[in-house]
Length: 163
Image 1 (spheres, rainbow, N blue to C red):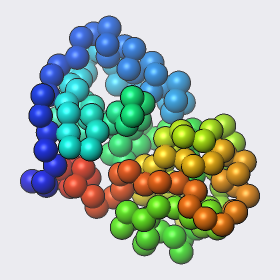
Image 2 (cartoon, rainbow, N blue to C red):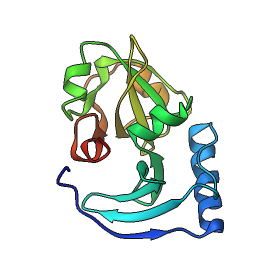
Image 3 (cartoon, rainbow, N blue to C red):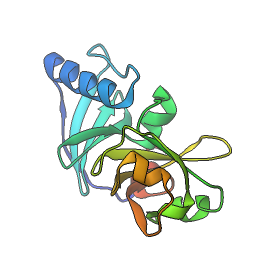
């Protein structure tokens, strides 16, 4: 078991699950869990976690719900994606922030401060979740400097908790 501290895990009420699922659906563009699934909310050392049955499929970062990498693998969303070239993949999967020149494509609807998911150019595989420091058009412009602050990536303690 990884060294992530999970505490105060509590089953959510049906109407709370509906509201959370609706918000995630609007953000990600795909249907997610329903109130029939056992949905729990728990606190961790970094952010609140959303458990669906026994899997951590979502997180709440600064009051905004979003899918974890496992959640993206399960539900296959089509919004809020940023694609990076294959040269950036080893850095992103080690938790590095995404730099502007490594971005090959970005959802134009992304606004500064939005949570986004990062995928590789070849396979479209999710690599990380981060906070965009620019709008979608600015991300696509490949301007230098930090573009996305990574908060969760393949191989971190949250990813290892689900193994």
